[in-house]
Length: 117
Figure 1 (tube, one colour):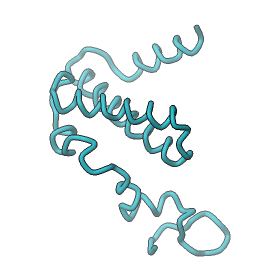
Figure 2 (tube, rainbow, N blue to C red):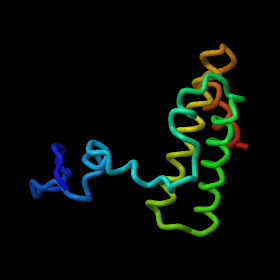
Figure 3 (cartoon, one colour):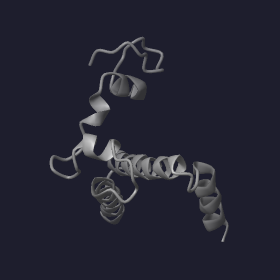
Figure 4 (spheres, one colour):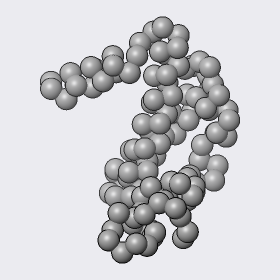
């Protein structure tokens, strides 16, 4: 792999241990199984939380995270699934925020309350 970002290991080599380089060259986005999610443009350009593409993408990301947890998948696969879920949840929060419904701080407040209870 070639990259411009050092792997933060004292060997002056960019390699697979370099998380930033993986993202910089696009290698970290090749993990989505073909046909598992709606096309990116349909999801990320959705203007409403109830948009069918946005809803289906959120559902698929949540189901994938659950599948990885149930299967005790390897840590990288579980992290990717949780990352996709976080991305889709963040998209829905962004749409709600733009509509004046609630903001990320409200979601975080509810998450903290859920952890504390």
